[in-house]
Amino acid sequence: MHQPNLVEGNKPIVLGHDYSTLGWVPEMSGSWAIPLCHERISSFETAAQRAAFQLRQVCRDLSVRPIATYDSEYGSAAFMNLTEDIPADLLLRLRPNRCLYKAPEPYSGSGRPRKHGDKFQLANADSWGDSSATFSLEDETVGQVQIQQWSDLHFKKHPNDISKLFESPIPIALVYG
Image (cartoon, rainbow, N blue to C red; front, side, top):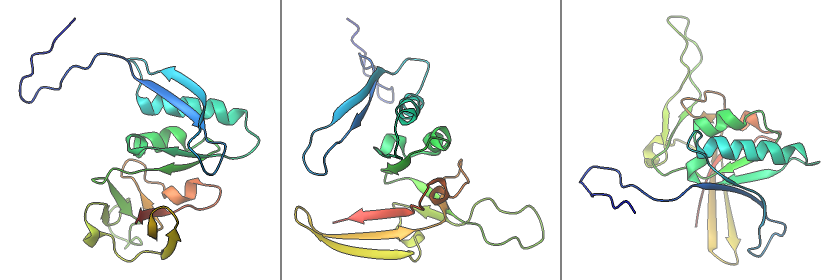
C-alpha cells in the first residue's frame, strides 16, 4: 500500500474512488432519500459532468419539472453550462468565497459593451448593494430565518442571468438564521 510522504505544499494522495449519487426525497419532513443513480466518477470526467449526465437521464423519464439541490462543489459556471438545457430547476449552495457579477450598465456608445457589471462577493457584504426583496419567517426548528434576494446575477464564465434559466424566475438568495 502506498504511503505518501507528506511534504508541505504537496496535495495528499487519497486512496479510493469518487461516486455520484442522485436521489429523490419523497417526503417534506424526515430524512429518507431514495437513490435513483449511484455511479462511479471516472478518472476522465469531473463530478459536475457525471452529475449533469445523471440529472439529464432522470429528467428524461419525469412528467414534472424537478427541483434539484446540489452542494457547493456544483455551484459553478461549469455546472451551469452543463445543465442549462436540462428541464430542471437547480438550487445550488455557493461557496462563501464565490463571486458573481451584476448586470452591466447600459452601453454608453463607445468601446466594447461590458459583459459584466459590479462584483457581488458573498464574503463581502459591502459589495452586495440593495437586495431586490427581503423575507423573514419563523421556523419551528431553527427559529427566525431571514432571506435576501438579488436578481440579475451571473457567473463570470456563464454570462447569462442565472434567474432567466428557470421556468419560473428564481433569483439568488442568501438564507441565514
